[in-house]
Length: 119
Image (cartoon, rainbow, N blue to C red; front, top):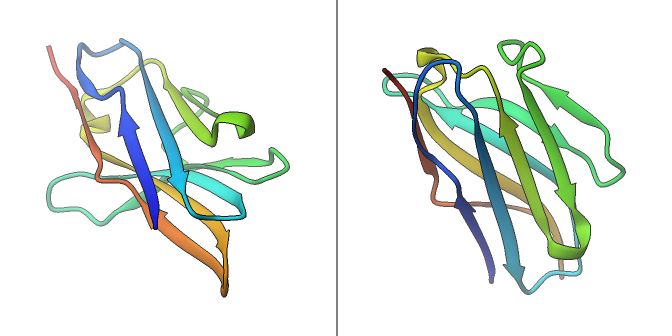
């Protein structure tokens, strides 16, 4: 079993900042990639940011330098620092971790955390 727990969502005004955290725990050998995805009402889930095991990152086109993904391997935790937030960033943000377990690599998802950008 792998548990993935997000935290840090909430209500913020346009132009504000939030920091999301996601911690993975349970039975696995190691974590490969870690990522953040989001899903707004009526839209498909989309990639926000991804970080590989060696620290390589990639971002959705809409991020445009506003967000930064990082990870703490000792804590099995990934972070998403979001600055200059816009109303269109409103969505449920999901954490995904790619874990190595017996049998191979598996994707595990968190339950999601709501981010609302509104004045």
